Amino acid sequence: MKKSLISIGLMAGMTGVGCAGLDDVEADATTQDTQGLVTQVTGTSPITFVTAAGNVTTPYDQSSTSVVAYTRDSTTGAFTAYPGTGAADGTLSVPNVPSGRIYLKLGPRYLVSTDRTFDLGSTEWGRNGSYVSQPTPVTVSATGLSPWHPADHLDLYSLNAGAFGFMGSAATGRPLTGATSFSALSFSYADMTHPKLLDSSLGDVFSLAQLRWRTTVNGVPYRAMHKVLDANVTLVPGQPTTINGTFTQPAATGTFAVDWRRSAFEALRTQVNPNAVSAYNEILMSARPAALGTAVASISGPPFLLKLNPDALQTDILTGAMTYNNPLPATWPKVASATAGFTKSYALGTATPYTMSVDIRIDQEASAFTAEPVVPLIGPVQAPLVNTRGAFQNLTGVGFDASLRWSKPLVGTATNYVVNIFRLGTSNGATTATRVAMLHTDLQSVYLPPNVLQAGQTYFAEIQSWYQPGSNLATSPFKRALPRARASVLTGTFSP
Picture 1 (spheres, rainbow, N blue to C red):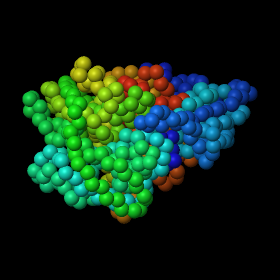
Picture 2 (picture 1 turned 30 degrees about the vertical axis):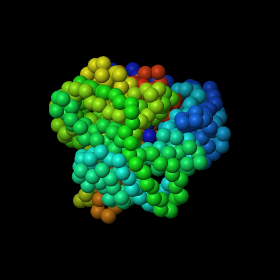
Picture 3 (picture 1 turned 90 degrees about the vertical axis):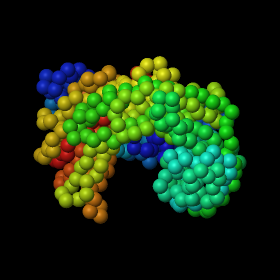
Picture 4 (picture 1 turned 45 degrees about the horizontal axis):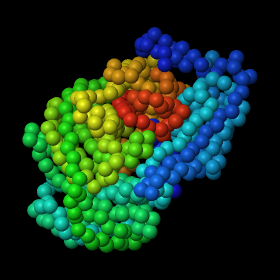
C-alpha cells in the first residue's frame, strides 16, 4: 500500500496576546516535580477502506515509523526525548514517559497532548491497493458526447478503487468545439490526483465523466455531471492502455441551489496575512458513501456532481437551481465544500518567489448549503507571534527553541489547531518550500521541538484553525466529521 492517509504528511486558556506567557498557557507541561510519575504512551492505526463490496479494516504498518515522545520542562525550557517503537500490526508504544503534556513525534508530525492513548486510524475511499508512479499512457476513443463546449470538463474516477483525477493541461486530443466524439484523448495515468492501479478482476471500473457548462436562470454559470463512459480496465504500470466506449446519460437527476456569501470569505483575507492575495473561490458538490463522512477529504476529488467557480470576483451569488445527472448510488449522501483560496509569496534573495496557497474552507452535508447562506464556520487565528514578536513581519534571531502562539479566531469556535513549518530553499534560481514539521494541538501555542529549526535556514509557518465538533486532532489526527471547517494564517519568515 502506498500513499495512505497516515503516510501522507496532512492535519486553551489564553484570552489575549499579552495577558499570559507560554508557560501559563501550557501550565500542564512537564516540570521537575512530575518527573517521578511515569506512564506509557500507546497508539493504534486501523485503516478502513470503503469499497463497493463493503468496508475492510486493516492495520497500517508502523514498523518503519520514527516514534519519539518529547516532554518539555516548563522551568528550564529543555526537551527530553523518550524513544518508542512502532509495529507491523499498527500499534506503537513509548514506555516510561513522565506525566504532563507530550509532543508525540511520528515522522515529521507531532501530536501535542496530555493524553497517553492515540488513535492514528483513518478512513479511505477505495480498496487497499498500490498506486501508479511511473508514466502509464492511456488513450481513450469515445462516442456519445453531448456537443462539446470549450468550458466543459472531463473527470476520471473509479468508485471501487478510489481513484480519481482531472484531464489537466498535459492531456492531448481533447474534443473540438461542438464534437460528439473524440478518437485520441491521451494522458498519463500517473498524473492523476489519486492514481490507484485499476484491476477489473477486483471490480474496478474506469469512468470518464463529461461535466457540461451550463447557466442558471439567475445567469450564474456552473459545470454539472452530464454523461459518463464506463469501461472495464486493468492497468499495467508503464504499459500503454487503449480504451473505447460510449458516453451515456444517467437517468437520475437532481438540483442544487446556494446563497453563497463570497464577501464573508473575502472579508477575512487580511487576517490570513496582511499581504495575502485572493486566488479563487469555488463550491463543489458530490455524493459519497456514508462512511466517507469520516474521511480526511470526502469531497476532495471526482466524481463531482457540480462545480461552481464562475469568476474571479468576491461578490455574493444567489445561484438559483443548478441541475445535474447523477450516476452515483441513490443511497449515497450528498456532500459539499466551499473554499476561498489565498496566496502569499516568499523569496530567498534574488530567487524567483515561491507562491504559497492556503484556504478558508467548509465541508458539510449538501442540505446545509441549501438551508442557509454559505459563510465561513471558522476564521483565521488572531495576532500570531513568534516568541513575543509579531509573526507577520520577517524575523531573525528567534532561536532554535522558538515558540508560536496566537489568539482565538474572531469567527467561530476552534476545536483544534495545526501548525505547519516550512523551510525555504532554492532550486534552479527559484525559491522552494519544504514542510519539515506538522504540530497538532488543542492549545493556542506550540514550542518547536529539537532539530526542527536549523542554523542558516529560513522558515515560515501556516497556522490552521479547525472547527470539527466531536473530534480531537491532537489525539486522532486523521479522523474527520461533518461539519468541518478550517482557516489558515501565513506568517512572515523567521530564522534562528
